[in-house]
Structure formats: C-alpha cells, structure tokens
Image 1 (cartoon, rainbow over the protein chains, first blue to last red):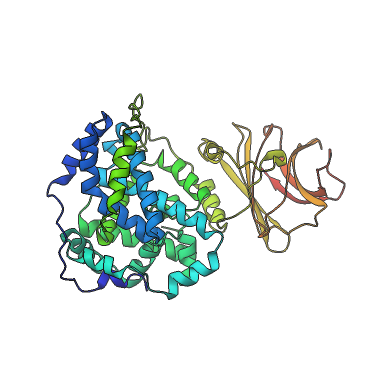
Image 2 (cartoon, each protein chain N blue to C red):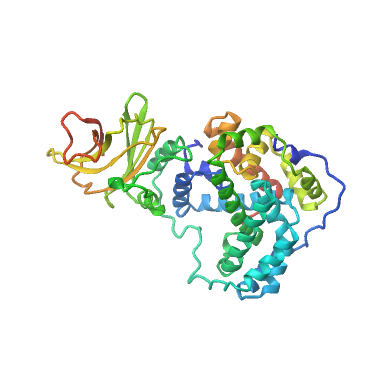
Length: 204
Length: 242
C-alpha cells in the first residue's frame, strides 16, 4: 500500500540537509522577491524547490507535468510574494499549499476521464519512483517526519497518504478503503493532529 | 463530536481533500470560527511537512526557465490591508443548518450536476452564493422525502430571501419532464422559484431567490420541460414548510 514508503528503513545515500533556521530567512527572501529581487527569488527557489517539485511529482506522477506545475507554482509565488501573509503560516507552508492545490487540480481534472483505471492503479501498483524516495531517506527532515509518522496508526497513515500524495478526496479515500465517510474524515483529521503534535509544528 | 459538524472537515480541508461545495461551506465557517481557523492553519503546517518525505531535486532546466520567465513578470503590489482567513469577529454561527447541509453534501460526490435558478444552463452556482446563504444570521433548514428513497433539503435565509435546495436520490424524470420549485403563500398563490433536473445520480444543487416572508411552504412539482406558470393540479409531489 502507498504508505509503505513511510516506514521503509532509512537508506544510505546522502542528501544535503536543510539550512538550519531557514524559515526566517525564507521570509526575508520572499519579501525581497516581492520587491523584484530576482537573486532572492532564485535563492528561495533553491531552498524550497526539492520539496515542492518532489511533492508535485508524487501527486501527478509524470515528471514533465510535475515540472509544469512547479513552474506555475513559482510564477504564482513571484507574482503574489507581496501578498504572502505571515499571520497565516510559514513560507514553506504557503508554498506547499499553493503547490498541493495545483497538483491536486491537475490530477483531478485528468482523473475524471479515467477514474476507474486510476483507482485501480492507486491500490494495485507500486509507484515508479521508489528510488526517488530512497534518495530522500537520508534527509534529516525526512527522517524526522517519518519518525513522527510512526506514531500514527497504519490506517491513519494510509488515509493521509491517499489524500495528500495521491490527491484523492476524503470521499474517494472512503471508497478506496471501503470505509464509511465519517471514518475516513476522522482518520485524516486525527492522523494529522497526531502528526502535528509529534512534529511540534505550529501555524506560525 | 459528530462527523457532520464543519469542524470534522478541517483535516480533509488541510489536505485539499474536500469537494468544491464542502470547501465553500467550510471556508464560510472558518471566517467565523477562530478555533477551526487555527486548527486548519496548524494542520496545513503539518501537511506541508509531509513533503520532506518526497523531496526530489527539480530538473535543472526548470530553474533557468523560471528565472528567465520572472524577468518578464511584474510582482503584484500588496493588497490594501491584507485579508486573512482569521476570523474578524466572534459572531455566532448557526450550527444546525450547517450540520444538515454537511450531512447532505457529504453524499454528493464529485462530478455532480449543478443548476442555477431558472435553468440558466451551464451556469454554476457562484462561489459566494452558498456562503451568502450559510453566512446569514437567520439561516435555517428543512427537509422532505422525495420519491421512494430521495431527500430534498432547503437551506434558506428569510432575511436575504435566498434558498439553496440540495437533493439526493431524487428520482430521474423522462426527457420531457422537469421538476419545478414553488413558493406557496397561505392564500394559495404560487410563485415559481425555477425548474431543475437532477444529474444522472439523482443529485441536485439549486439556488433560488424570492419573497420568503410571504412564503409558508416550498413545493416541488413535476411539470413539462420549461416549467409551468402555475403548478399543474396534483403535480406537487413534496411540500416543505419553512
């Protein structure tokens, strides 16, 4: 099932760790981008694009489409940098929110045509980029999140993975897992709460 | 906590896993519920952390394309007074109608048919239409069975004279027939509130407006396509007292 990769043992390949204290710096880079500073925007891209692109790729599955969506995300970020509201969350949360919405829009419009095949694929095939996931294994942040995910029940991880990484609605998650609607909603919410508490993230 | 409360949807919302009508409902709710807005923000932050587990270097050419593209795009100025999803006031939200709507909308799946007042073909309900009803201080709801297993629920505000009709398992009609919604006054006067047909799964989402102060009941009749100026005698299949 799709949550297996959350629990796979850590790999050995190296991935550069994220810059410590990167969050305030990202806010500064974004503020400079809003004033038209292309160098700052390039630095913002360098620090965040692996998370954005990797998530989008995981959702849309196709590298060419993932690149398109990622480009659209950053063009939107460039245009709307001045409209980022720090009161609503950190810069990466904002970027990932924009990216996830766009990725999900992309797969849902494609999926409406081929719903049956896609559902089959989601439940019965292994996705083709395990090597990518393994590359991410060595990332300390990834390990921290993976550790936090261990604190969730398998059922919660599965529901969250189908919603976040496969782009399914909670109704589709319920159908895929043969659950009552209320149960799927509860699993997603309770799982996210547990993840949030384990990671110690806050909205600012 | 029951799964029909809007707050039950915050997890799915944070993962962009709500259908469009549910998302509108919840966003209308978030504008007034500080607790839910704060929970959404924290869950979004947690969801964003998931992207660490899928981090992948973006293709090299993307960076150059992007940096050359932004040279031709002027960043937008800040909004005059940033608006946020944080609640502006603690005005009380009326829960029962929302709970009823969520319960109903929970059975309506993606790809549903949406029709607008007076059968304006191709028009979707405006993004603000639902929230304008749900946002009203006097929002109320009423339900009635339709056919053997269907239900129609009205969410309405008499102050704004607006109605949203949500139907599930509404019996399908022959091609030459349509459903028509009526505002019925105690004195027997009937005013059409528009015609609608369910989608192929029997789902309906219609909005209408009219003088609700004089309306005692809403009626649903089956008429010839195009609707009737007055309900055909005996054609009203459901009455909903509001």
